[in-house]
Structure formats: C-alpha cells, structure tokens
Length: 349
Image (tube, rainbow, N blue to C red; front, top):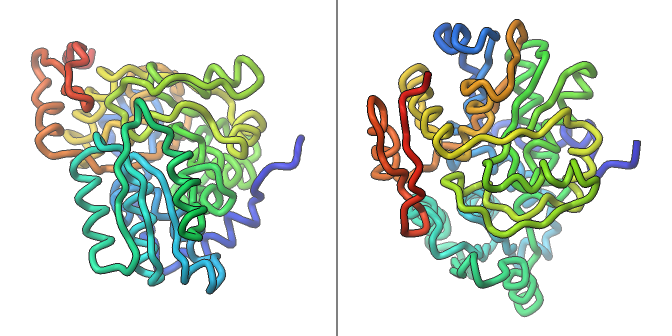
C-alpha cells in the first residue's frame, strides 16, 4: 500500500486538539428505519456539530496547528459554505484574520452565518465569485500571495482530513463495532479521514462513499484508476459540487474505500423527509447523501450493523419547507442556480 497522507495517529492527535472544543455529536437509532433497510443503523448527527456540519472538526484542527506568525497574518479558504463557516468560527476562537472565498450563489443561510462569525474580526472578509466562470483556487492563491495568508483548503489538507476522521472515531466509540460505514463524498476530506480511522479500528469494515448522481467524479476516478475532472455538477447537494477528488484524498479512497455509489436529487429529497419524520432532524441535501444510499436501497446491507454520517444541516428554511412539501404528491425541486431542476418528488415506495 502506498504511503497515505494521514495515519490513525494523526486522527487521534486531532481528537485531542478538538476535545472540549468540538461537540461530541450524538449517534441516533430508529426502529422504523431499521425495519425499512433490514439493517441496524446508527446515524452520526454531524448536523448538530458546531456551525451545523462536520467541517468544524477539520478547520479547527488545521488552524490550531498554525505558527504564531501564520496566525498573525491569517488564513484564506474557499468553500460553498460549510467549510467557510467552520474556518470563520475557528479563526474567531483562535483570534486570527480569515478571508473566505465563496460562490455568490451559496445558500443564503451559509453566507449569513459566515458573515456573523467574521463580524468584528480584524482583517477578515468574504470574497464572492462565480463558480461557473471563475476558479476559486486561483482566486485563493492570488489573495494568499498578496496578503501573506495561509491557505486552508476544504478537503485536500492532512490536518483537515485528520480532523474529519474524528467523526468516525467517535461513532465507533459510541455505537460499537460496525460492518459498514456510509459517508458522503465531495472532495474526499471526510471519507478519507473516516476511512483511516474506521479501517484501523475495524479492519474488516466496508467503507462506502456516496456522491450525487450528477457529480460522480470520484466514482469515475476509481474506475479510471486516476483522478477524473468534471464540470461543476448541477445538484441540490451544494456541498458536493466539487469537480474532482483531492491529490491527497484520492489515494486514501483508492486504498481504503470499498465502493462509491450515487443517488439522485429526488432520492435526497425523500431522505430529507424520512430524517425529518423519523429522527426529527433537519439535514441539508449534501448531509443526506450517505443515508439516501441506504434508505433508497442503492446499497443493500440487510442484516448488518451500519454507520451513517449525516454530514450537515445548513439548509435555507424556505427551500427546506419546499423540499418537505413534496410528501404525498409531486413538486418541482428548487434549483439553487435560479432555474428548475424539473425532477418530480414522489412518495418513497
């Protein structure tokens, strides 16, 4: 096996740094969803993490390791929303400037929360860009060079990956041994960290990644044997609108992840409805990816103990109500890019 970017020791060190800072989010169960899937399912509710997403784990772990000089100059990060919020809050807690590069069409709730975390923090701001015509990495690199900022990428960074892996570490401590672990996939930071933790603790565990059908770059990359780049996917799972896996995350996925499957936007909406009805949780579309693969039968894991990471809960409440109102009939999915996706939401079978 090739040398991977992080080890289990890195995840343990991250857990020490996060102790007393990150929330130890609950693991929830539901008899109705066990019956639906034929499995014993454990849901790790990272939608209840600080900033409403697992991203706080990686962001705080990375920022806490910066030198005093790096902290003085500050950090820069690019994100569709959750990583931006996480970096903003971590920067506030550690008292350092933060510049966040965010798409102008990011969910309003994520923009507003990021602005609130940055309020009054010296040298901090949000820089907006067009995700379809501009390169966020190039913008970030330019600003970092001009201002002496340290870049904290959303997934392709060892400290970010290790921090995210603490979600799986906690889950196994809370739920006990698992046969399978389901994790959403965008750029691969969460699944790579979780795969390192889970396979170290449970060598026989099957780790499965789940992407939106429109953004299956990691699935394609695994089939091709190398990183495949795609266009920005049109999906309601805005946190997974990445165009490729990371240079550091992809080798971990290749080595430790059993499979990567996809789900449709309509399946994500039905899963949001199930999680609201049965677990009383608000989960954003991206946060539903892993659960959707199980609840919609994409993965058949009957008879197994299955861990599912609900990665975040930051969804605009008006849009969320539109998603939920599809129950019992049909509706047009709201399109975060201003049009209509045209998918019909129907009752889950």
